[in-house]
Image 1: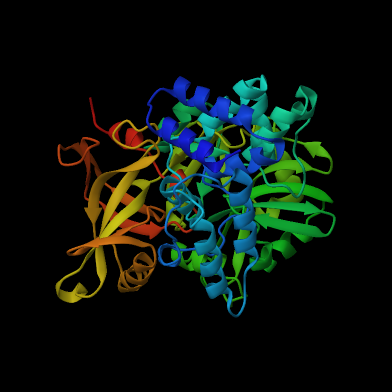
Image 2 (image 1 turned 90 degrees about the vertical axis):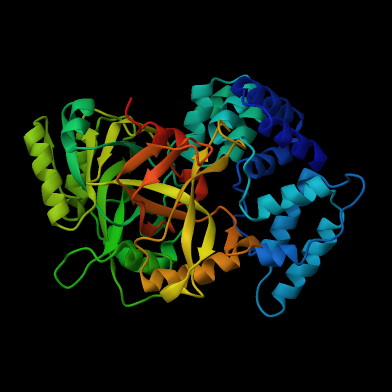
Length: 507
């Protein structure tokens, strides 16, 4: 298929607010792809190319973009092979070779193809082709049920391969996709509530567990082989040898565990989140040790536990990893839930997660079975621009522009980000120095006093609430926003939505 056809479909999807129209356009595209093109095309559409990031940044790309071609000639396979080639480059002279490869390729692309290629390379696809819509399109094009496609995608962690199997395989082959030790699955997600009592009113009897101020991990063990994955399913086994050793000592042969890891100080209290993430993201071993704690188990020695109630999963977790379980209590009493919440905060943790005791593990979904409770409102937003500071912050990038995700384009471009406020509060000297360097690396353009950046950096913001405002397109503004931390473990597609923030307006 010509790449131009794929690009034209993304423009069609971005230009309509109708979910049905999006599904129709994407289903027609999927039906026209060759079998070997399906997985790469899906990866391009959702901004998750199978090759991952290939070492191309805004500056490198802008310097390597050739003059556009007049007519489209590139194919979907051509772009897929380009990413293979770029990902294979490394070592001395690789930067020059990457620039040459990019220029040769982009000179064969039309102007709109160049824009598409840039967004794919930078992980910056914002077409409104969200994974849920694309999942429905796969079901439509393959004549499979939406539930079958969703389950296969969740358990494989790969929508592209799921689409290929749905479109080229049988219904039985799709239904046969299940848990596989060593292959990560999408993590279950939690809704939010203001208090533990409110959360318990939603879940009924529940396990009220500490919400650790750490980084989420999913650990797979098959025999002596252990692999550790992030919440985004990236393999980071080589970074966490201490976690590998802990799981290797457990009394099991095969297991899949869900949990968190964080560093502790001399008194056993959690170190600041940024210290954990600095160690979590380091390619080389460092002195800081990360300790694992687990709150769920999805598979034990040939037995899948996804569809078992949480009570059964917790019993198995206690049996095999009791020493490394996250603290918590099972209760239906609001007073007990509030006490556990206070205990978690006193221990230096973020709060609690209240989990319905009879709930299955809903991979990849955010529902009412798990409800997180934090002492303040915190939301994950995306940095759109940064202003140069003044006075003591002269020469530093300081005031950040905050955007909430707009998945359906209710207030602008589908999949884009709606500005909801600015803040420089909560920024330490260390964070100021870091963001001054970081945001210039992903700079898109400048205006007097402001650096506009690729909307790829997620920051956790604490707020006292929101208020109605005509200043921003979404009709709201944040109240007393302050930076809590940068979320290196999240990508922009996981940011909170404008709809969630708007729901905070009373009445």
